[in-house]
Length: 307
Image 1 (cartoon, rainbow, N blue to C red):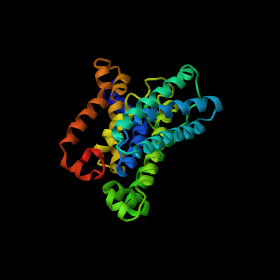
Image 2 (cartoon, helix red, strand yellow):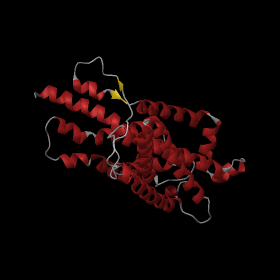
Image 3 (cartoon, helix red, strand yellow):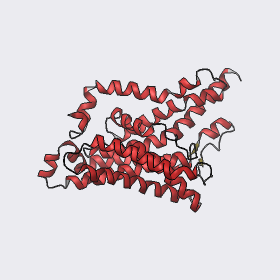
Image 4 (tube, rainbow, N blue to C red):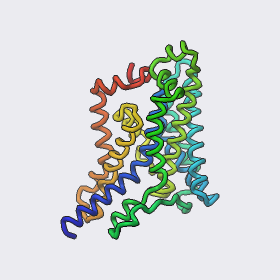
């Protein structure tokens, strides 16, 4: 393989990988962004993601409908988000500790109920072949786009518009910035946070279903590889902005596809190091965000990390 064809192969693989790998990041990040905009942080999204992956795969296997599995995965995530919000309403309860506990709870439930679905094959979500115009198989493969990616893009732009231009969006922002101000305006703070956390859980469940029903397209206990936790870092890096969440998800997706892209052209030395790129990126982003006054200035005032 000459240099130019190798470069085309790597770029095509990275583009396709970035799109595929970024999709669950995008949904989980948008869900966590909504939750944190209400003034609450949910560290349990790793458990929600895995539970969504398991429940979506199980429903797809039993019904033959991956889209029904996707919907059930979203509702499973919504239940986890609702449970988080209800527990956090209790006095002297820390939302970070609750999130960690629910992460372990979600993982445990998913692993226990999912043992029967490790071997069976469930129907998977389809893709849209946007690379039909090209005769290059790498480009054709890269441009096989799952509809969820396009839905995620549309959702990011919609949320960016809604947070700035609609009454519910402004109420959510006020609630996250100042609970006292929201109460003074007569807004039901706990109900708003419950709805935001439940919506965030729904989106995280959708992201989990993408993992088991499209890419990599199977159910196993190591499926998520920490993507739920990395999404929290992604939201901080994106400074709680939906459009920046989209860009950051694509960045994480490109980092995650680096190892397989190099392997596609025969570069296997250092393969495991390149596969660790998303975790290294997360580490550097957290270090950078920890010392960023701008990130803290953009953070909702009621978040625990701002106090």
